Image (cartoon, rainbow, N blue to C red; front, side, top):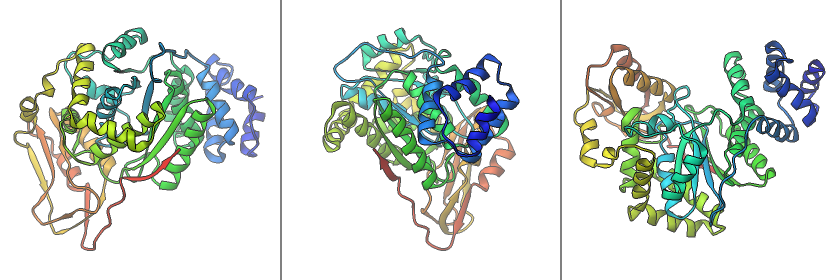
Length: 422
């Protein structure tokens, strides 16, 4: 049976829900071997799936575990998802802004993956904050504060957990229908009704070309729409780190700076995503939603919301004190400067992300990375600054020195947002 299904994929034929259930359910039960499942995944990576089969695969994945439901409130529950970006702390800004506008926000987030940071890792930098919570506990936090962000539940979409592990081990990760069904099945299981997806594009993204990113965004939005959800996707730039700091407590500090009024790419994208969510949840125009979201930021209500959530989840609020945060940025352990005048032509976001990860293991707080593609820098000007208590190993420094390529020719900066898919 599994052989005939794989042949249908190779011949670009449509698959029924029963056939997809045979594959997914069989792998979970053990009747489909690891080798057979790997052959199926490779066929999908090579040939893809039809739009209908991708929707049905998502349904099969979703039905493998629990599906959450929440108490009805004035507005539907909202959620967001990022396909993975460097210096991307948007959830720490989007969630409290959305909640400040009266839209309940409950998100299940993951940990570090590859060169990108994880929201749960960042939240746990608020000392004592609990991310391992039951859904009922998280709902109580939402009732009290308007928002909650918790670690992903083991009961949700067990098929995705098992299949993703195999995809990671067999090099079958980069496939549009497999990525879409993985992401959307988990989003649908999480119980929200309004979604905005942040799909990264560029050298630091899993989908490097804009065309691939748009195709993935369109696929995921269509699946969510077919499931009766309100959804949109933002195609955003990942040729440069989104925020100004990479790694550790400094990424959290950057997000808190935005909640206190700092303007940067992180702030701009977060406001856009939050405004889109509010627009969809309330059924109002984007312009009106943007005014609400901007006011929540400028009036300090979003910062207050996040502080209430941190307290409700058992965390310390000391990072909300600007003077306390400043101690992490007092004096850099090391600086990397430009060796010539030039325009930033390329930033190796993957190497930068892994270097920040290794610096954290050595006691570092994070890396200041203010330069973006297209910026002009003079010889001797700062490219990176590493902050931490102790001297960092030479391999981290040597990798950082090669993370930026300068050109004598002017380089155009890519747009922060390439496209919005609705």
